[in-house]
Image (tube, rainbow, N blue to C red; front, side):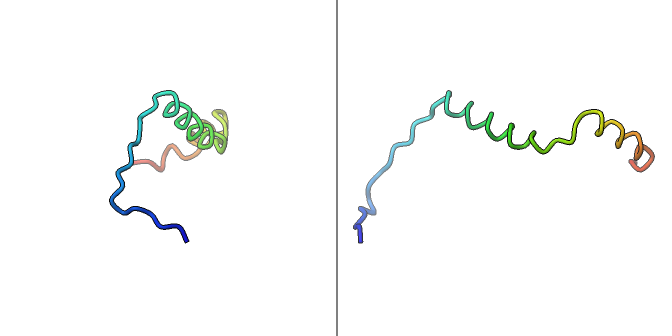
Length: 52
């Protein structure tokens, strides 16, 4: 078993390039499930009367 120093302070650095890369990965993952613009427009037209 490893003994960790409970009072040790850690330094985390902000990396703009890493932040952009992670954001792109998240958006790519989110967008990979997108059904497509044509299908979305057709469905929104089909259900246009249901919105208040």
